[in-house]
Image: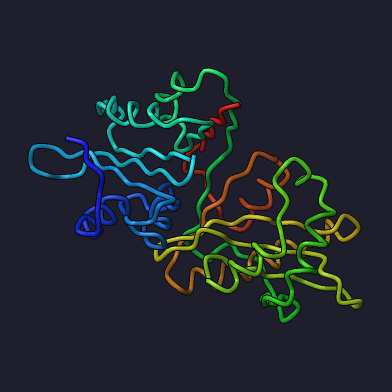
Length: 263
């Protein structure tokens, strides 16, 4: 049986998703932050005859994320739900799960990335007081750096408002290093923070300051603080150079993440 979840299901669905809290970071975060009555999202659950959850589907705006443990699970009901929504859709999730939903989107772009997590501090690099935690007033300087990063040119532009908002509502954080001119030259950020984990995003260093260990220092301080709060860190990457940095401080690959974007 598939039905839309409500507040009475909160504990049960979060317990189910928390078995794999890293892969389910986005679903857990959206449930914790927006609940079951926000017009922007819906959450469905598939239950067995004992009323135990066997699969979950999240819709946030036009983005759908399915999750289930058993790849043999019958999720035809989820496919019908996604197909019933008009307009362009985006389906994302663990690679083997999303593979089963590919036929739903006829004209699509596919993006595959490595999915990694960090659960301990053993490989973190050294850091010092040069690594600072951003405040809302730092948003302009942060965006000024991000706008210069060639690797981000094909991604949606990060706005000052979005940086200020995540710092204010604590859905993410930003750590940075500045030079003697007070220009931010290296940055590491998180987003989608929840009670179990957070996603590392927007890691960058200004071109002329690269290969000096700044990003490892900045990221290590961020990871150290998050791990001290009892949370894991996750990230996506498809750039081998970036992957080398992440693995060097302890991130390990736990799977692949696929996004299907309807054109």
